Amino acid sequence: MNDEKMTTREWLPLIGLTVSAFLVNTSEFIPVGLLTDIAKSLGVTEAKAGILITGYSWTVTLLSLPLMLVFSRMKPRKLLLLTLFVFSLGQFLSVIAPGYAFLMIARICVASSHCIFWSIASPLAVRVVSRKHRSLALSAIVTGTSVAMVAGMPLGRLIGLQIGWRMTFMCVASVAVLTLVYLTAVFPDLSSGAAFSVKNIPELLRNRRLMLIYVICALWATAYYTGYGYIEPFLRRVANLPDGTVTIVLMLFGGAGLVGSILFYRFYDFHRHAFLCSTLALISAALLLLRVSASSVVTVTGVCIAWGIAVLAFNVSFQSEVISCVKTSAASVATAVFSSVINLGIGAGTLFGGIVCTNAGIGIIGYAGSFFSVAALIICFFFLSASVPGENAEY
Image 1 (tube, rainbow, N blue to C red):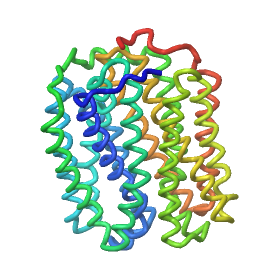
Image 2: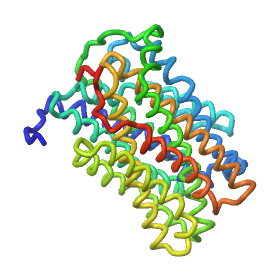
Image 3: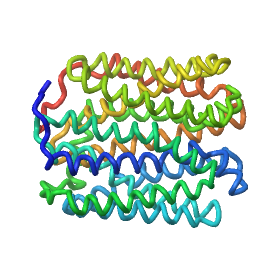
Image 4: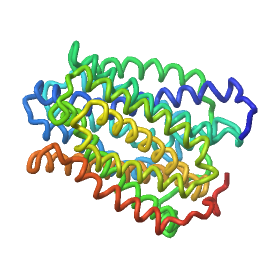
């Protein structure tokens, strides 16, 4: 492990990217923490409000690759700033949304910026630091995601409960504008590098390891959001927790992700295959135990903490797998497809979870989700090679 510290020149843009990751994921998670209140405000069912999550996710699924191909020739700095501008605009539109349809349009606008951001965030993070600090840079980006779950989504929930869910979006929009100004000042003017075109896609499709990673990630995301997409009403109705306790449990869920990020930094490079399988095994166990644990605030909190650790550890480790097994010129596009696949699963999981809630009851969402996570674990254990990735990687 390298002890040489990063320079200020490396830290400043990385901090901006980390804050941006925090904002993008906070915005994505907001409907989860305020699902009940948004539904009541707009006069729709919780299942229909959950479609806001599905619509957002499937927009990312459909547009990540096309948008990245369109903008692949744009200078990284300019593309990052444009992305944050569109993100801020979408937040402001969410604030003024007069009804469900308008809010869906606003969320699609935000999702479009999400497409680009998560296609470029990790590749840019490893470019603004030296080669020896790239693992730390990836951990920092995922830490932004974790902090969004620790503070962003629960804080957004608190703001929404006190003064309305619209003000939660307003707060995100305001911080996004400040972050845009900050990155305008500190982000370096990186070269665009070799452009990736549609002609290069068959090369990615022939990458067996990459295709297996995508399948595993789609199953994982479906499993995750079958349960997590409805965790707030589950904790209220099945576990019978009061609003304040629900917020605390969600904060602990997100906070546990920091532990997952630390575990990745310390153990992933030395025990890659075991680490990947362990994250999926822990996620499967958490989903299977969710209903049983709901009889006690202590046990359901413990399951959520274990779940949170596994989720963030999975996220950063599989992002690393994607970047490691492709060439540098293909990293942004491969990450764009990764984002599409994850959001395909998120949308499918939210939709499936809504169907389960409506027809079978919210109490079994954990069992329903575990079917997909166990399938992902089996594929990872038996078919994803433990060999070192990166035969074709340039870094």
